[in-house]
Length: 386
Image 1 (cartoon, rainbow, N blue to C red):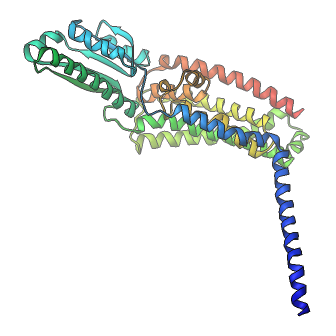
Image 2: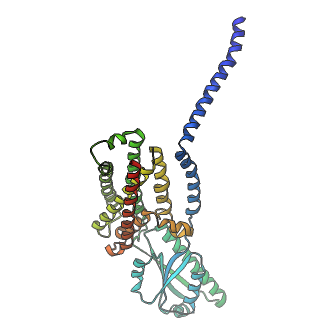
Image 3: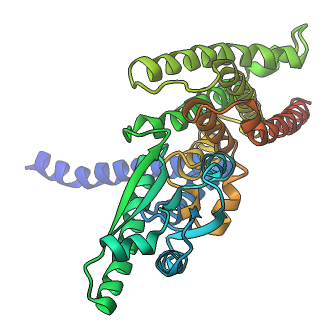
C-alpha cells in the first residue's frame, strides 16, 4: 500500500521533469536558430521570394508575342485581318515586311515568334474561288509557345471569316498554313536542352564552389590554409579548378547525350558553342566565389545559392516560362541573370545554326559580367580573409 502511494506521488514529479528537459531542448534549438541571424533571415525570405516568383512568372498564356507581317496584296481583306491581329493582346506587330527575302533575316535579327504571310491577290482570289491562304511561319525552338501562337492566330482568322460571312453571305474559306522553323517536328528537347545546360553548369560551378569554400570557413580549416606558404589566390584557384574540370566533363557529356540520345543536332559551330560555354563556366565560378565570401557556413551558402542562382535561373531565364509573358519588372530583372544570355546564345548556335556574329550581344554581356563579378568577388573575398 505504501509502495503504491509512493509511485503515485513520484510519477507526476518525473513527468514534470521530463517536460522541463524537453522544453529546455526546444529552447536551446530556438536559441541556435535565432543566434544565426543570417540563416534565419534567409529561411524567412525564401518562402516570400518563391511565392512572388511563382505567382508572377508562371503564366501559361502567351501574350505580347512579337510578330512580323508580309502583305503583298494590301487589300481590304488583309487589312481587316491585320487590324484584328493588332487589336489582340496576344500579339505585338513589330515590323511590316516589304520583301519575302527579309523574312528569314528578321527571324534571325529580331526576337520574332511568328511571321504572317498573305498570298498574292488575297481578296481577289477569295472573291473568285472562295478560298485564300495565309502562311503562319513560327519559331519552333519553343514548341509549346509555337503551337499556342498558331492557335491564337488561327482563331483570329476564323473570327474574321465569320464576320465576313455575316456581311456577304458567301462561304469563304481562309486556310492557315503552318510552317515551323528550326524544329519542324516540334521536339521538346530542342527547347529544354539549352536551359538544362545553363542550369547544370550553374549548379556545378556556383553552388558547389560556394559550399566547398564555406565548408573550410565553417570547420575552421581556412585559417590553417591561410598560414600556409601559399598565397590566398592560389588557395582559391585550388578550390575552383576541380569544379572547372568537372564542368568541362559535364559539358561534353551533356552535348553527347543531346546529340546521340535526345537527337538534338548541333546546327552551328561546335567550337563557338564550347567557347561560349567555357565563358559561362568562368562566370559561374566567379558567382560561387562571391557567394562563398558572404556565407559563413555551408547552409548559408546553400540558401544563398538557391535564392540568388538556382531559383532565378529556373523561373526567370526563359528556361521554362517565356520572358515576354512576365510583368515588366521581371522582364527587366531577367536581363541581369547570366543564364538568360547563355540560353539565348546556345539556342542561336546549337538550334538555329547561326554564326559567331549572331551571339555578339550575348558574348559582350557575359564577358562584362564575368570581369565585374571576378573583380567584386576577389575584393570581397580578400577583405573577408583579412
